[in-house]
Amino acid sequence: MRVAAGGFVLAAATGFLLFSTRPLTYAENPAFLLKLGLIGLALLNVAVVHANPGWQVALTGGAVHGSLRASAAVSLLIWAAVVLAGRWIGFLQ
Image (cartoon, rainbow, N blue to C red; front, side, top):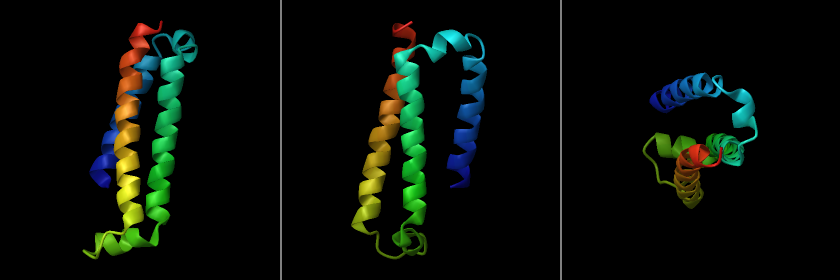
């Protein structure tokens, strides 16, 4: 979790630096807005996983509950969509 959190913070910091070059242009870009919404959804998914009682069980080596597997699948889909939305930012200027 620490590595993932560190990666997210680094990506957010560099993304903010890119955003700061033309904030008004990006604020009107639908792909950028979609990306921000998807990142928010991904962070909500992280909160749901951590609130799930099965999370602690899985961390200690216990069985992984189906709801955690579903959250993992949702996470993969959301982060893939974040990458795709990020790629479209340059095409929708």
